[in-house]
Amino acid sequence: MTLSETAPSANIEFVLENTVHCRRCHTTLVIRYGTYERNSPFDSNATIKIHCYYCKNHPCPQKTFSFPSFPLIPIIRHSWDTIMRCSELYIRGSTFAAIAKELNIKWPSARKLCSFVQTFIPWLKKEGSTLGWGPSPDKAPPHLWRHFTRDFSHCFYPERWPEQPPTQF
Image 1 (cartoon, helix red, strand yellow):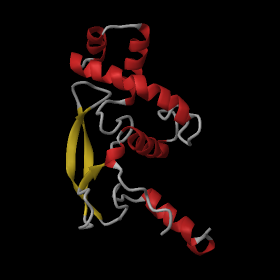
Image 2 (cartoon, helix red, strand yellow; image 1 turned 90 degrees about the vertical axis):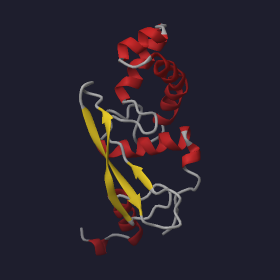
Image 3 (cartoon, rainbow, N blue to C red; image 1 turned 60 degrees about the vertical axis):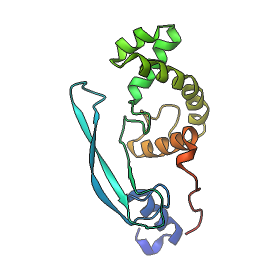
Image 4 (cartoon, rainbow, N blue to C red; image 1 turned 90 degrees about the horizontal axis):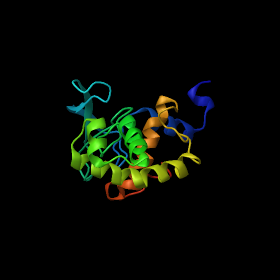
């Protein structure tokens, strides 16, 4: 199938789906703007690099942004496995100190993570049953991770998403 055989709107959606665009204003006028490091969810002694991007649309208030890849969840800075393990330990009735020791994090972080898990797990069950990334985003195809993180951010951090994405181009 060639581009001329598809509808124009389908082409636009394909381009937006497969290119980096600003989360706030949705422009593709972005450039790579360095990297930052996060602790690896696979090895506590290693780090991984996450690419940063810069929005070149002058009126846009969002100047820099990044797209953490699987299994990192944006904003809360914990991996999928850490959140799921915290949920298991919390449901079993483990103390914050025991959870912190098991997850190799500090006690205040364990307390905050347990508080987060209490709202995240019900949301995950409800939304995952109706959305494309399914009940287990970690087992969904890799290209759906971005959709999961977007839905997650919209729900838990709406102040970072003041405008709705455009519905027409």
